[in-house]
Image (cartoon, rainbow, N blue to C red; front, side, top):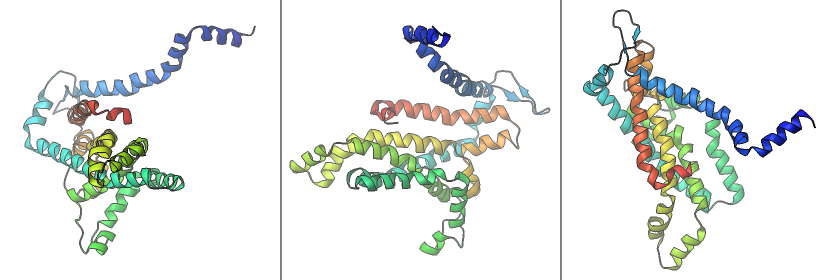
Length: 285
């Protein structure tokens, strides 16, 4: 018997060993590259930078957190980031639901495939190209001003519009999947029992697809919380938490404080995931 056949026979008799060998590489990657980096982030957040030498001092301190919570500038940036994330999520949900509903319940199978590809097509284009495209459209002589006669310019509104466009596919696809799993017989049963369109939507469609909407919101909310490039391109003078992190790593050379600020979106997302876990949204990811 060859060595390969002997090893194959041995692994066949040891399913747990076979499973362990199969999962060892991804678990090692998850443990070192992802969780290890996250742990390093939290540890660094409790260090500080020497103001004279610029070197990182590995002494435990809560000074960075005290600055983050007591300085009005950082509180304003945190609430602004939260507000933008909520606005982007709501706008994407409002736009995505009717699109996904048509794709799942009215479009033919051929049209469904075409529409899914159309929704995913923007994801194949460069993030920077799409963001700069919105900068051109929102300029004084841009497409938005030409159509509506005025443009919001660069600022908070431009940031929300651009991020809503960038993350819209991440909201459409989970809702489409949720609606596609919704049996048509339930909608038909509601109509047979006398339920009007709005009553059917409110009592049947929306409750059963709510986990899919929440699943999409996890993407749009978290991606917005961590973004900083769009704000640089169309945000004007406004900043988000990502910009504070970026500036403290680069110009300010204050890595511990950048790590402290970076913990805020992480904590917000942990709270958000804990809140939506009971809705079954995580099963729709």
